[in-house]
Length: 405
Image (cartoon, rainbow, N blue to C red; front, side, top):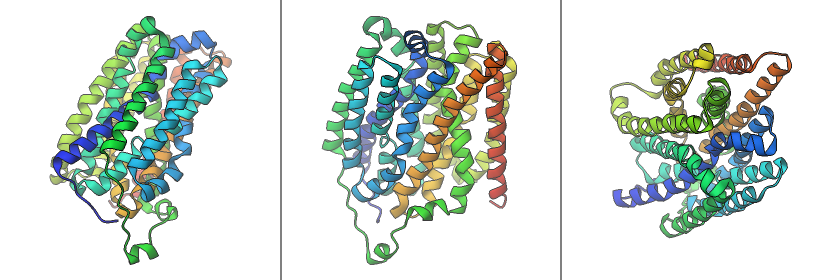
């Protein structure tokens, strides 16, 4: 598919509309961290239940990534994003009415399905509508919007809870999603899927993505490093601060607010400087090789600190993990434009399957450790240590596969 670079004003408008959708997606992704004390009390949830509930979003999200790649390449972001958001309305409405854990979980999975195109749709469009040198910036600034959604899922939600309750919060989100659908239909360009004769003969298949050497090298990073980092940011940082560090729910929400606020600013700066530092020779591979070990050290500090680990510790860990976000646009740029949707959604599948595994898995290890008579602090430390070891092994595999890069 040929590039169709858009004028700057049109590009900014498109970015704004897509950003609104991704903001809601991020808000729904992270809101369980803020609601965890309330939902745990109201529905008598174990750590495993809480991890499964938060992970339900990622299960629904991940289940759609492969078909989503085909749909986006064929029909484009306008049709697909607006259609999928209708499912998100159903999911958020059902969540607001749920009376059992099963009802919450099914609704959460539907929400994940519904918002599954909110990043992949835009990135597929950007691959065609934006110049190559701005792909990393567009990706970083979409992640800035992600952080903005995370910010609003913390302190603002905590403040609203005693005023209108969590059920009305989800009802209001459903109304916002409807508005975003209308904006998408009004302002996002139609998809001109023009394929020449050569492309028709070799339009690219999913196997072309999964057999690619660089893609294979990123599989453990996507599943475990990236997925686990999101699991901590959107769920387990909150329970650690409440149950280990002794924060109140409001203090935990405030801590998450500052963590995600810091990430918002960081992604803006990161997106701005990326094209500049790339010209200086700091390519994606070099940044990842240097940056990831620093994030492992910061996670180790959290584990060792135990009850003394708080907002600042988790902020540093998430901040030093920012180099992980370079992998997705790097994967997309390693394929031709006719494989944009399939390559992006394939890597996104890894991230969200990984997030589901890590959110639930961290909770299960905590429960298992508690069953073996360890105290709560030790159980969290053991679970996070298992995650750290897996991260180091994933990084080692990535380095081994790209040792000549």
